[in-house]
Length: 70
Image (tube, rainbow, N blue to C red; front, top):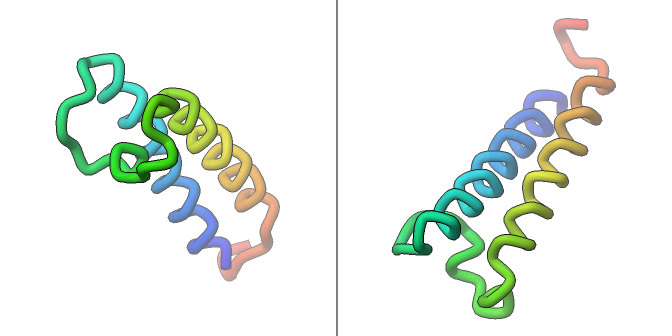
């Protein structure tokens, strides 16, 4: 479970930070999730910041989960 939470955290952080950079650099075509959700058009930076925050929360939570190596 710890590995899944860590992976999800990393994925959300990459999507969030990458989405912010993409938007600030002109918002060209990319593989960032926020660009493909119609309901978030116009709110890409806010949505990307939320992804970063969620990734950080899940990452901190994954540190508290006892895994095989603990």
